[in-house]
Length: 474
Image (cartoon, rainbow, N blue to C red; front, top):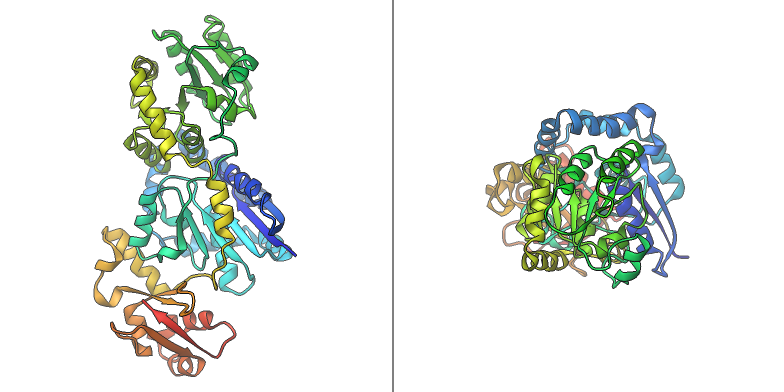
C-alpha cells in the first residue's frame, strides 16, 4: 500500500490553494504515493468564520491596510499567538478535524498556517500518527507559521532558512524549496504559436497587466496610463472574475485597439507569462514566484502592508523588479524599463536566477523523506525563540539558562526535541554532555516539581511507548 497524503490549505486569496495544487500535481508523479486528498479548510467551517478569515481580511486590505501591516508585524515572532485566538480557531474547525481523523493520513502537507497549527495539535495529543510538512507561501518567514510538533518546514529562500536556524530551529528540519507554482513555467515554449493564439504582434514586447483572480480596481488607472505610453508594446490585461472591470477596461482599451488585448479569468496565465516581457501587478507570494519561475520581470504596484511589502523588498533587492511608489507613475515605470533593453534583459536573468519552477517537486520529495518522528519544541524553548526574535538576536546569544539544546536520535542524528539548557540540568546534562538517558522512572521523580512540568511533558512525548531511551545532545 502507498502513502495516504492530505494537503490542507485555507482559501484566504487564491495563493494557498494554488500552492497546494502544485504540490498535489507533483505527488501524482511519485509511485510511493497511493492517495492524495486536498482540502480547503475554510470550506468546512461555518459561514461566520469564513467571512471573518477571508472577507474580513480583504475588507481591511481595502479600507485600513495599515491594520493588516500592524497585524503582520505584531505576529512576526514565533509562538506569540494569544491562547484565545487558538481556542477560537479550534472551536470553529472541529469538522475538518473529524475529516482528518477519518482519512487517517500518513503525510499531511499544509500551505497555510491555520491547518498547520491544527494538525500539530492533533499530533501533540496523539490523535494522529502522520508526518507534517509546513510550506510557506511568501518570501519571508513569519512567526505564525512555526508550530510544534512538525517534521519538515519549507521556506522560499536562503535568508528565511538562515533566520529560522538562527532562532534555534534545527537545520535538518528546514529546507529551501521556493514557493510551489504550477508546472511548466520554466519549460521552453513556442512563443510564436502563443502570440498567434492571442492575436498578438509577432515581435513587439508584451506587457502583462494582472488584476488578480478577483479583479483589482486599480487596473483601470493603469490601462489609462498605458494608453499614453511612448514605448511600442502590446498590453494583455487580465481582469480575473470581475466582469464589470473587464467591461470598463474594454471601453478604455477600445480607444487603442492595436495596443490592448483584454481577458477575463484565464487558465492560460503560464503561457502568457512565458511570452511576456514585463508583468504589472501585486507581489503576492504565488504570482511573484510564478513570474520568477518564468523569468518574467515585474513592475510592482500597491503591495499589501506586511507580506507583500516584504515580497516586494526581496524582488527589488534581487534586481528582478521595480516598484511603483506612486499610483500615478505606473506608465512611466513601464516606459523607463522598456526603453532600456539591457536593463530589461538583466532583470529577466535575475528573475530566472531566483525562480524555483521545481518547488512543488522539492516539497513533494522532501516531505517523503523519513525522519524518526516529528520535532517537539518545549514550551520553555518556544519562549526562548520568542525572546530571541523580539530582541533581534540569534538564539545562540541568549543568556546561558535560556540557550537551546537539541535532543537527537543517536543513530541517524535527526533532531527530535528542542529544550532549554536550564530544562535539561535536572537530567544531569552539562555543557560537556553529548548524550542523555531519559526514563519513565526518572520522570516520576520530577513530575511533582512544578518547574520541571514542561520537561516531563516533553520527555514523555519523546519517549512515546518506550520506558527508557538514550538521546544525543547538541
